[in-house]
Figure 1 (cartoon, one colour):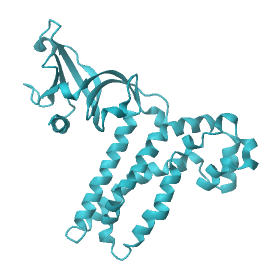
Figure 2 (cartoon, rainbow, N blue to C red):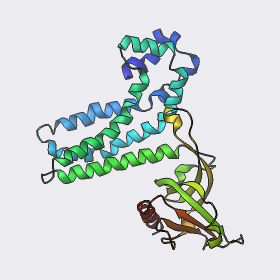
Figure 3 (tube, rainbow, N blue to C red):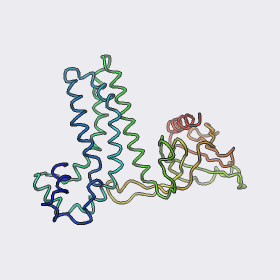
Figure 4 (tube, helix red, strand yellow):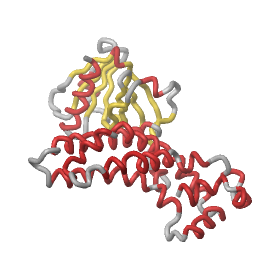
Length: 293
């Protein structure tokens, strides 16, 4: 892909085949694939080869390189931009010519999906290795490597949702790390209103997608997806946010194990939040508690 497509975009002999709108879009189309390639070629593959005789110790290799795996997050975040560009120009003569020269059965988009597939495959491989490494040396490292890779996958997934937020004025990066995101039923009660919470509880809840950052929690409304591939990914229109410095939490709401409360400014605003399951509620409550303490 790097030699047969990306490099060809800079090849003067191919320039006449590239439409003007596609020029200078190399970084969008290929993201940081070159960085991923060099990481594997120069670092990760060589490290792995050191463990050919000791496969059970390969977990260490993952742990040593875990920071480098963050490059996948960058790749996945760019993927929706890359896909929409590809859809505009997929029938371009330039791409057809590159594919013909390479004698590839599949078009470029199949290859651009590889890094996304690769990062999801590692956790399967590590799970499989763990299965056969129960009490041997290195089992702990394998387990830790698996946990770290799953962490990266969660970060990739969360960030894919986060880049779909529309209508937020500020800079999301200033809100600190994105810790959790998910969809909930939400009822609100504002002190300024007349209704008591118990009256409100009868009313239909709002569907809200919450993004918990270190410094704020964002309430968004999910817009239904249309299109295909990554375009199907939903978008979220920003409604409002609460500064974590002024947030309080009530972990149990009478009569429903899936509900908890987030309140603001000494209960001036109260949000009753219903998770899809008690387990999801527990995870969120724990994360929020960590932020607050």
